Amino acid sequence: MSSTTNVEGLASYELKRYSRQLPLLGEEGQRKLRNTKVLVAGVGGLGSIEAIYLAAAGVGKIVLVDKDVVEPSNLNRQILHWTDDIGKAKPLSAAEKLKKLNPNVEVEAITAEITRENVEELLRGVDIVIDGLDNWETRFIIDEAAYRLGKPYVHAGIYGFQGQVTVIVPSETSCLRCLLPPKLRTPQQQIPALGSVVGIVGSIAATELIKLVTGIGEVAKGKMIVVDAYSMEVLKVELTPRKNCTC
Ligand SMILES: [Zn+2]
Image 1 (cartoon, rainbow, N blue to C red):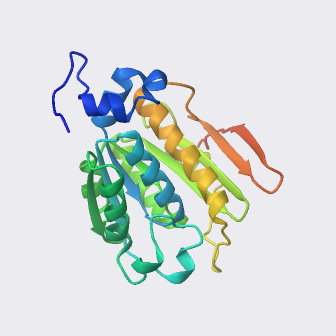
Image 2 (cartoon, rainbow, N blue to C red):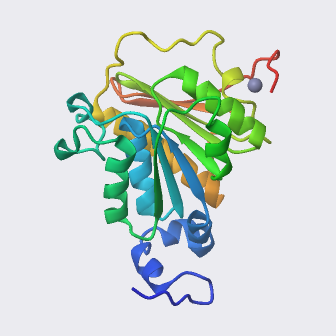
């Protein structure tokens, strides 16, 4: 592997490795990805898909945070975790695969719950956060802190055949909480999930992040991409922020 960089600043291995996306992102876009540090909040179904595509695309650093260990019931959708990983901490299991996929990406695995106490520290080390979570409480902890620190937050969520993605950019949109209905509660029962549907929604989130970082394409700011895989329809819904939010 050569570390020689050409005049535009991409190494020869990068020109080869990313040759199929360079026509889309440009060398400048590729350099922007390389210079970006992403926090993947939750390394379950959505987080697996987001992390794998961001690593494959050449994001410079990926920080994986999750408190859980791999369980048999995860394996239908959390594709960075395999049967042999049962019992292993999810960030470690995911980091092993990502490093094999793309050794040029720096991967940090943090086994922890995201809380009000540690969220700022987690966010300070990154440029942007992507949502691999399964509960609104943690999403709002991240939303509030990311907004305060001026870091973009790519939100994604699934429920059964449905999923949604929106991009929060503090200087341009309101926070996630005031774009959503006021009384969202995480369901008490387990959220039904099909791996291929999680894959669609996670792929949309990763694509939105790549577009936001590289400045290419139309990013879903102030809009919710709503996926209904049951009827296989994708809608983009204009969001109206609540007036009484403190953000
Ligand atoms: Zn707000």
